[in-house]
Image (cartoon, rainbow, N blue to C red):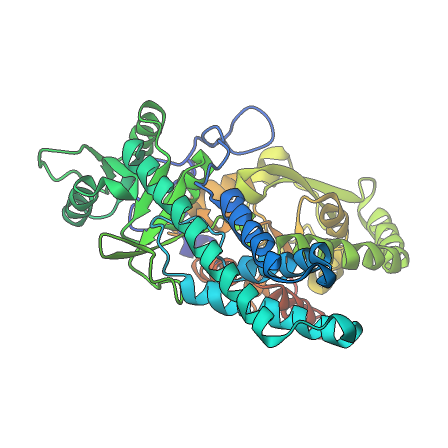
Length: 475
């Protein structure tokens, strides 16, 4: 990126939404009171969950099924083993997930996993206690009883949920072009069994039609969410910025169309294929990501201690007091934190530090500063930020609030980078997008990383970063 290529406005602006609805007003004013960019008050996510009753249905079916076996088979031990396997397998298959449509289309998945659980249990009993081996007839009887029971109880749970949804529908906003959004909202209005009642449309412009109001700014969205107790947002188009906003409000977000969940035949809204957009905070593996951060950052900080001391001494001798440079950066969900670096130059004042884009050939930079910047050793203190939880080892690079505001106005998708913890390195950086490179390219790489995140991808990026240290390009 170059300063000219970004067309950055001369004065700070708000942090706007990105995507097709970038014309909507900003997601937030520049600052709130303390440590984060202002966002609407966060509301806990209230997903319509059937986890408890469905768990009860599965375990109850197991208890009923073991009654087919004789008392000599240690029914309680068998119940615990089979129930544990069933819950594990069904959970991995997403059979306790929230859904817009509650049907028994999962019957094949239930039957196959129950069969695996019973066969594994029977094999384990035969291997470790041959005298208590379960005969084929008793095993088939237990499996059949289990399947009939679980289908019956789950059917009752789903039927009750449909009645409740029809009697107490949840208010929803539909995001999309006005024409398509009105047609979709009309279909939902005629079919209350889905439990979703559209109360407004969100679009980049009003269409002048009568009916549901069209919301064209985030201020109007804010009022609608509060006044109508909106609990769902249904997206007919992709817009990461608005998805993040609604998830911040605590709304369940749905995507109509797009790539469906494999094997989820029941996930539709009156023929419109749909799937839930899972918030980043709910993704599997993020706990493992944090564990990886701590497991690698702690020993890396200890091993790098001699290097840190040498760098600190070089900065002190070359540039005087003030070895560490502290700067406010924007982290996940707009939270502000203090980033640590070795000082490579001394800005004239706080305004320059917060609003001036640094360049690699600044004449005020000492030889020590040039070396630290070129080798990226000035970034080593950020390992402490990783241990503190301000950052992750891998993620979008954090930026100053001033530039977050400006880049968000110019580049669609920039604000959506803050869905994930910021990182010491990232997918953009291992592709050479560091320092004076394209912001548009960077945010595209960052959002691709977030949308396709996996722990293995983090490991690969860390390995590529380590390999890149032998041919440093600087920042």
